[in-house]
Amino acid sequence: MSISLLSFVIIIINIIIIAVQAKATEDGLVFISAFDDPWIVAGTGTMGLEILRNCTAQHLKRLHAIFVPVGGGGMLAGIASYVKAVNPGIKVYGVEPTGEIVGFLVSMCESACVSQHV
Image (cartoon, rainbow, N blue to C red; front, side, top):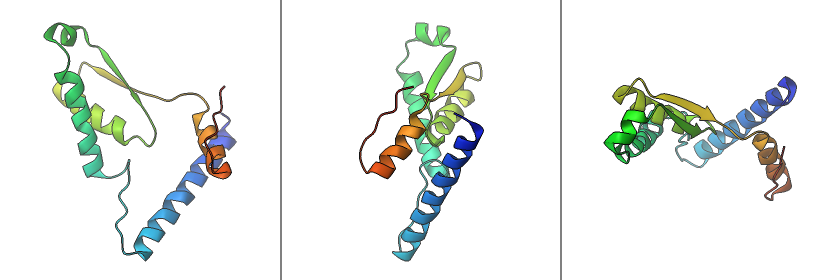
């Protein structure tokens, strides 16, 4: 993805978030960010707990990395916070499929699910 397309995507997403926040305020509702709220990030930290809890002692000795899908980053932040607090030696990587943001934006514009395979 080119820098100019990525910049456009970031601008569009920010516009959408601002519009949703404004609508929530207008309707007397509270906007809770899925990736930028400390309670949400803390909640996703429990996924890190579950990952480690479901490993046997033998697996924990060999566990060196966890790969987490990234959207807004809230789940990654929560899992990494917990895992690194318990075992700083485990690396936590954020991963994202190539080209998916383009499919998301096209789907939003088309009001239908559109898959972009790169």
